[in-house]
Amino acid sequence: MSQIRVVLIEDHDLTRVGMKITLQQQSDLALVGEAATGNEGVNKAIQQQPDVVIVDLGLPDIDGVEVTRQIKAHAFESGATPKILILTLTDNQDTVLAAFAAGADSYCIKDISSENLLQALKLTAEGNSWIDPAIASIVLSQVRKGDSTTTVEIEASQPEYKQILEATPLTERELEVLAEIVNGYSNAEIAERLYITVGTVKTHVRNILNKLCADDRTQAAVRALRSGLVK
Image 1: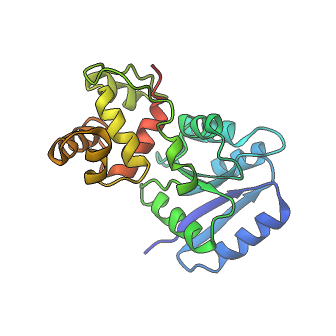
Image 2: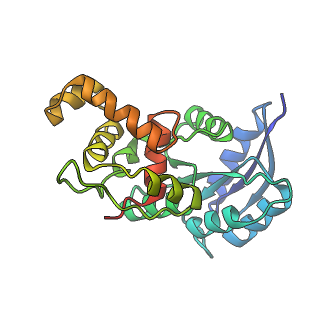
């Protein structure tokens, strides 16, 4: 099995060294580049064409959101755009939303354990999304309550999401169900909270996954985040 190629962009020396050591101890990972600034990190990513770029949001020149945007916008020779795993101290709503809107694939808080960081990194490399539990509830914080038959106009940051959501917009009720999923509630708990049957919840969940072309609940939440969920 080939190694997962990683570029690390982190301006704090001790944090970067600690993460570097953690990554280098894994036989299935290869740290192919590191940088302490955003511009240097973008250049490293373009040169090395890694599978995953770990990006700190609080960089001294351009922030991690702009780094993410530039990497995702670049036309890589291999045709495969690196996955972005955001690493930050903040769970600020605007920052979280901006990071995913820019194209981030996963989001970790910096106090994450080494074990969880490695799990998040590997899942991200496989094409899945990892959202730190500390910020999961932010995913749908902009959802407004209303008539369950009303659809929501969504402005997607990436063309494929815009096409998907324009063709099959989520209803307000589906957004409510998705919000409860993000908050960690089971189908039975969602049914109780929204005063609907478990069967109805299952139908909404199935519709949400189908409309967002998502394989699971976490992926659906990330795609909703990237779409902006703007009323």
